Amino acid sequence: YGQLLASVASGITGEDFIVQPILPSLKFMKGSVDSMKKAVGFYNNDDSDGDGYNPSLDIVLCPGVAVADDDDAENIQVWKELPEETAAEIIAMLVPPETQTIASKLANSISNTYYMTSEVYLNATADMGEEATARSKMWKTMIQDYQESGKCNDVYSNRLTWTMLRATDPEKGVSLLHVEFDTTGNTIHDIGCMLTLSLAIAAHPNVSSVESRERVKTQNTVITWLTQSEVKEKRPFFDVGLDGSGQIVAVSDTGCDQNNCYFEDPNNVPNSFINTAARKIAQYKDFVDTSDYEYGHGTHVAGTIAGKRSDGPGMADGVAPGAQIAFGDIGDSNGALSLPLDFQLLAVGRSQNC
Image 1 (cartoon, rainbow, N blue to C red):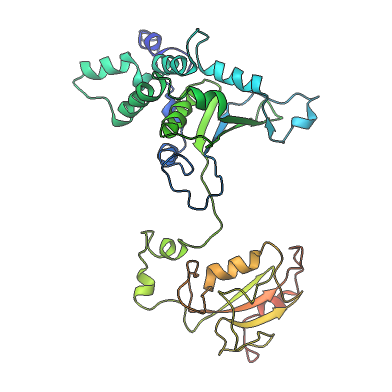
Image 2: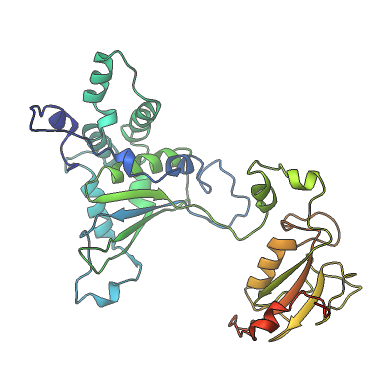
């Protein structure tokens, strides 16, 4: 099961045998290879925030692998950094124990075990008059350019941090492995090193899946075109004047920062009565208080719905920037929620005549 060399597997013949290669490429989650190719934080890639983001891989191990012992309670459900010697053992598992450089050993290991880069595959496609696939050619080039040359020695030896979250159930649970790349001292070769190491990890029989961890930010810069067309900067609803104008949207959450530039209105002090002349917050029902808590969940939600800067277009305008907000504040300063009666909550945004 996934442990035979390509040359050995191809030599198994007979009606009683069916050889189906367990290709490492099948273990990559959708989009992971493309994500690694443009990994933010590597050399010559945009990291305009300058926040020290380090690209990383999430690896799911097969059931029963690296399960926590009963007496190892402190490591259960806690991410633990692996000792240097353990990380070295993991690298050793991915390469043959021959007296070569890390990079060249890794290259030989992949070339021998990865079917799509093996001579067996290339000869088979040639015999059928076909060409190797584009992905096969890409991996072959990666191995030649980044492994056999030894360009990735420093990355694998000094710039990887390995952490593990061990499973507790050997039958149903799976342990997770995380590999982070330190971009300090990065070079133009880093993306190639990351891709080739990910292939070596995927080729290991104890690995179930490999995924590049996406960088996630809490901002609304893409929400308007994403919800309208899924085409960058295309907003067909706005183009025909559909922006929520004339509508009041009721929101109940932790609170809303009424002084935020997306909600401020110097000519209106929101209160429990609806004011349709307000710029943005037409009503603020203070079931708990009149402010948001530190992390601003309610402010973020209200901004996503109908946020609009008072001084012109904003980078985080909401999906309905022309609409007004009727807000029901049900959160305290710690973010805990205190719900009023249903009829009180559902009355937010309704006129007194309804």
